[in-house]
Amino acid sequence: MNTKILKKHIDNFLKKYNNNPQEFHDDLKERKDFLIYYQSFSKENILQMNEEVIYEYLSKLWAMLIWGNKHYVIDKIIENNGLDKFRKSLAELVWGDNDIIDRWNHFRTEIKGMGPAMISEILCKTHPNVYMLWSRRVFIGLNYLEVENLPRYDYQLTGKVYSYLCDVSKNIASFLKESGYDQFEDATLLAVDYFIWHELQVEDNLSKIFSKQKEEPKKKTELEFPEQQEFIHDDIRDKISDIGLWLGFQPRIEQNVSDGSRVDTIWEATIGNMGRVIYVFEVQTKGSVDSLILNLLKSLNNPAVQGVVAVSDKDQLERIKKHVAGVKDLRDKLKYWDYEEVSKVHESLEYINSVINNLNLVPQSF
Image (cartoon, rainbow, N blue to C red; front, top):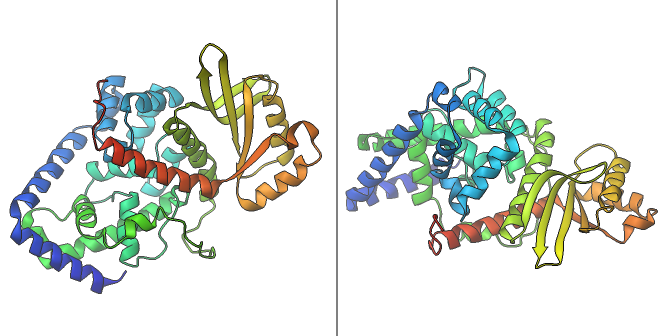
């Protein structure tokens, strides 16, 4: 981390405080209100949550600002995971005795529809001295500070990586304390997040992340772990569902579309009184290509299925294309989507939706 840049921005941050102390006091009050609310949920309280309480608990998250219809999204999280499983997994994540690495990995593996932004925000607002809040803007700020080994995509954010990022955030908090920021009553990791949002969204960093750039050669780092491979499938599956919802489809995950065919994600649309159309997506990160092909072939037995898409990395997609070349009933119908492109599309649509939803054009009760 470039401490010279960090100290320069901390100094600038403190000057802003001296010029407008009321804004900082308002931010402090907002943070305290968040902490009071989320820390009021003990393990026992989480285990007793009903659907209405879960809605309030999740809808307050900043990570939910990208959604216009929060009820739909939260209802889907409950439906896809089951109420009891969701409560138990959440209670273990927030209040479990195991190391955060294991709790993080377990929650991400078990619970569908919640990514690192939501998970880390819950942890940070419950344990603000221990856990940091991760978001795309935090990536931009830490990248500007030249922090190494940042996860570019959500599937790279394993428990080990999250633990590392918490240490980075604690390091920034220590610089804030040394500068005298703690005289304003708060140098928690939640306060670090406010600092990053207020001070480190500089130049055109935010717009750059959504622009087409030349990809840097991939390199292995000590923070790349085998469990990342486990996260790719579920992360991409959920992102395809999000993209479909933003595009106006009715998405579903892990859906049976015909006898013997259970697919990762579908987009469904009803066309007037003519019936429905379905687009099928299968995410392939490991396993048999022949099984993938057979599953997609069976999905085409459903006459509503109008398109099938294989989603994987570039190397796997080439393997799939070679296998499909000899399968007459599939080769002309199958489309291919690189999962890194899925992540980029998701980021762009997430940004667009957050901007539009901030206009409050449609009330939540609509």
